[in-house]
Image (cartoon, rainbow, N blue to C red; front, side, top):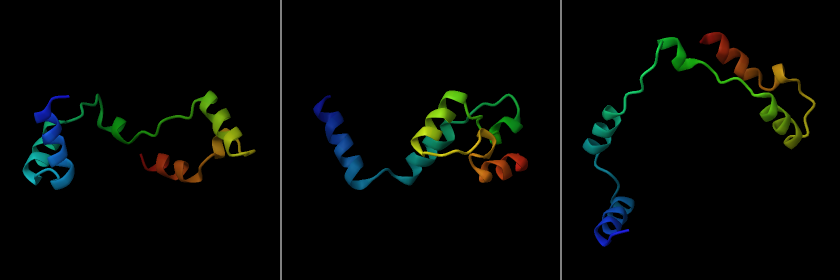
Length: 77
């Protein structure tokens, strides 16, 4: 890591980034989606992840009832 890069990083950490630069970076990243409906689609819970989650929480919840909030949010999308 160069000294100028280190100095720049330290300055950014202490003072932050100017609003103009943040706005420019935000506008530069525009996600591309095939359809607008894909933007709000909840991810599906993979079976292996579900089993690990169930084991880590010592839960006996079924896969469909893991999170009731997920159901309501999915209905909105």
